[in-house]
Every structure is written in structure tokens, then in C-alpha cells.
Length: 459
Image (cartoon, rainbow, N blue to C red):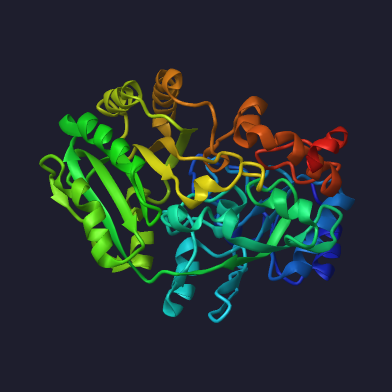
């Protein structure tokens, strides 16, 4: 328990808003995150306004040996943003963004969501790769890699991060770039939240204003055939085209396969490239059209309703054989919740061509994120949905690669976290030992510091 005198002492160094369980109705709102299953109670929530507030938080937590967690967008399925009995550093009110159109860069603070970021850059006809659901936070997404609609042409979100302003575990303020604290810069691009608290990210922007995007929908009884075609179609996709397929429930209650695209090149070329997809089979509907990029970024939002419970599993796989597709269709035909989604999100092109050791995100080459995104409304249905998800996940494991995407992990054992970082794990552990040797930032998909891995950090 934190004493009143300790909290008063903290208030003198902290200019943001402090929320405590006993006297502030905003406390319960602030501790809620995207996954409604998460119900943790920090001893104190510190809503920061700037990096000086973050410094004060880290200093306070270290002095009192408090557990510490960091919230940006609060979109982590594992709920790592919220700790029990410790200090939750809430960055969600830090939403500053400055666009430099001539340089095609922007400096963005970690409280921004994808939608807020895109609305700031869109008037300049600029964008960068982020995720695909607009209420996701930019910081956690980028730190974990960041697969989005522009990855084929422009790489992952982490590939477009050219500088990070951070507060380190010793409460110092650092800037990490390719020329300053290069090892930290390497680790922040895909190493999740293990190394420091990010207070701003500078991104490279690209000329993207209007795209050809949307989905073609097929009935569930044709889903296996549609997914097989989708995998073959995606294999030949040019960099400008990024694809995603999902087995979903439509608003009218009908189960369907949605084959989605986003083409960021010339309109004429885009129409030609997506013609085979639109011509395949007898779709229920064709909703592919020209739209502003900001609209494409939010076109999946309706499939992720607020205040739902989540349990996710995924594999970043270079192969999707027919057996995996058959298992997906079989399990989704008997899913326990209409909100649950299974899908294949493409990582390809520019994102795939980055060497695996260039960033902490290791899983390069052409891949699909093979996802099981279980969602349900009633907490009482948790056991049934989780058991079904585990059985589904086990059924597809013989047919996909073991690599996993750190941004889709829940609470997982160490072996799964290691699989998220793959061949880069030991190098990341060495960088962790340099910048966070006592594992202050452990409310993460945690990489433990390993000073004996120093050699690996420079190979």
C-alpha cells in the first residue's frame, strides 16, 4: 500500500493527473483496456503530460520498488498496460503530433491511436504503415513490429520509425536513432516494451492519399475454395497491394469469408491487379472501391466491438497448406461466439525484404499472420471460448510455422515469447542488460536481461 505522504511527495514532482482507487471516479475508467477480461487494480495511475512526468514516475517506482506498467493505447490482448498494486504510467493523454510535409516525417506522441495519427497526416497526402484497426495505439503497435495495409510497399511500422525519444530505466532521457544509441534503436524496432518508455516516435511518411480498398465476401460453404484462391493470389501480389482474408460473421448474422485488399498505387493499375480477386467465384458482395486512406484504415473497426473479452492466438507462417485452411473453416463453422474471427494477414514485399537482423522484429520474408481472434460479450462464456480457441490452435500447429507475432500474444510462457523474437532473442537480451539491467520494464512480453549475451549483441 502507498501511504498518503508518499503520494503527496510524488505529487510535488509530477505535473500530470494522479488517480487513486479510493477517491477518483476516473480511476476505474483509466484502468480499463481493450480486453474486458483484464481487471487489474494499480495502486496509483499517473496520467502523464510530458517526458518530465514519465521521469518522475520511473524515479518514484524505483525508489519504492513498485511494479510498473505502461499504457499507450491500451490495446494489448494480454493487458500488460495494467499492473496490480503498482504504478501504472498512463500515456494516453499524450497526443501531440507535428507533421513536416517537406521532409515527409512526423513526430508523434504515444497516446495517439492509429486513427488520430492518420487524420493528422492525411491532409498533407501522407501516411505510413500502421495497423488495421483505428483505435489501436501507435506506440505498442510500432514497438512490436506493426503489420498494416502499407507494409508491402513501405515496410512495417517499425521500419518507418527513424527516431525514438525515451525515458530509460534509470530515469534518464535518451534519443535513439541509427546514429545515437544505435543498439537501443535496433531493439525498439520490434522488441516490444522491454527497453524503455517511449515518449515520442519520429516516423518516415509516404505519399498516400487515396487507395483502392475493401473486400469481396463469399459464403462460408465456399470459404475453403476462396481461401485457397486467396493464398495463391496473394503470392503474386505487387508491393502496392496488401491483402487479408478473414472468416467473419456479417451484420446480418451470416458467416462469410472476406477477402480484403488495399492498393496504394495508381488507380488503373489497382483495378487491373484486383480483377482476378473480384472475378473469382460468385461472391455475396463486392465492396472494393476507391476511398481515402483514412477510411481504409477504419474499415475493419466494426468487427472489433468495444467492451468485449478477447483471447487470441496466431502464427507468422510462410506456408498455408490446404490442411490449415480446412481446419480454419471447420472450426469457424462451429465457433462459440459470433464475434470471433480467424484470418490471414499478409506480410510481404518491402516488409519481407528487410534482413531479419536489421531490427529486433525477426520474422521477414513473405508470410501470413494466421490469426485466431476470439471475442465474446459475456464474461461467463470465457471458459468455453478459450477452450475452443486452444483446440483450434492445436489443430493448425502441424501445418504452420512456429513463429509468432508479439503484438498478438496473451499471457504466454517464456518459450512462446522467445518464439516471438526468434534468432534476435539473445541480442535483445544483451541490449536489455545494458539499458534495463534490473528488469524494471518487466510488465511486457518480457525478455530478461542477459549481460553474458554481449557478444551476440554485436554480431
